[in-house]
Length: 246
Image 1 (tube, rainbow, N blue to C red):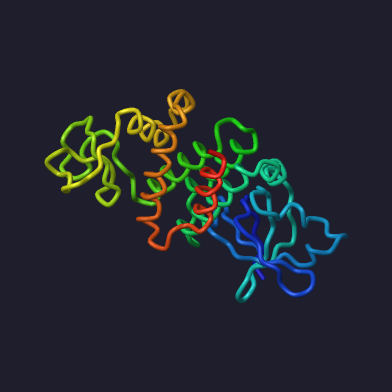
Image 2 (cartoon, one colour; image 1 turned 45 degrees about the vertical axis):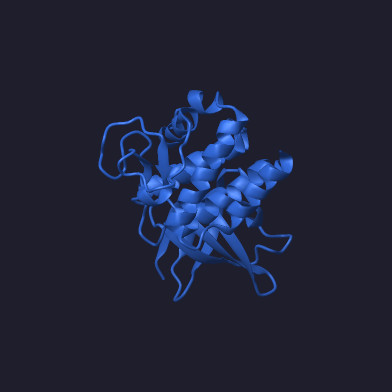
């Protein structure tokens, strides 16, 4: 059977039988892969810990009839334990990999792969607040999937901004003429933060206050839920954690 090698990040795992595990991977060259890792739940397994969620590995697989089989795995990015040590980072990472699972398929998407790996690396290094990192990842991942929001010009008619209405169903900010009746007005600081998260302007994002972050987070969550239809189950835990800590 054909053997191939790729870099991949582990999105999720499921137990299979007594000692095996099914792993869902987002790879650099082969898109999303579902494969069996045989014997990884045994204590003597050579690469069980390398195939946990949030880990990035160089994997060798051979093609099976229904599922491919992992035969080798070498760690590239050991982010799992570092992320799991911080609960806010852990819940944010869970939302990220669930979104990646929903937004990708078997077609290769190098940009989605690199975006996710970069976000997980940033979480593990505590470079920014977990909620900021998650919100930035979601906006950019949705953009790569074809749902790029506008936080400057009107998303409906293109009228130059700035504008003070945000309507997630219309794709971002809208001018006064395009805003539906009752559309909420959003302050300039929140819109600026949304734009910074989308473009990776971390100086602006890190300087934002908690109130602005909370409002931006609500809009990012609503935008994500709207486009993914069924929503992200993990996102509910992130939001709940944020409220509980406030």
